[in-house]
Image (cartoon, rainbow, N blue to C red; front, side, top):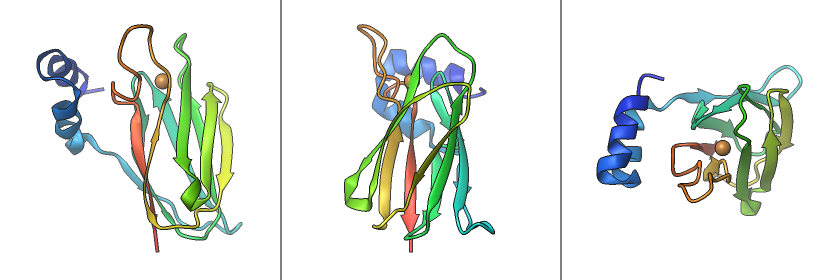
Length: 138
Ligand SMILES: [Cu+2]
């Protein structure tokens, strides 16, 4: 990943907040559209420590199917979305075997998704960059 080096330097020098702001140009967005089956399909790949895409845009009140996987790794990862107000509650362990997650977003808004895992005594994977945004739009 081309942004890895500056990101790490940034972590050491300035803490996490400014780094995430700096990482904004590296945003990878995916706008899902309704397929023939009436479902919005999107694929998210995780790794140490990122999700790609890290911004997924879906339409309100249309079923969504996320296909989520991680690269082969000894580090376990998860995908969490806690947005019960929008009908979206996800907490899945991820593996290299793609997993399908279905929900129908019922409220527009921007909802974070992230990995809740943490290396002992170190930052959470989320703090290290393993997060993204699910945008639900009208
Ligand atoms: Cu993780």
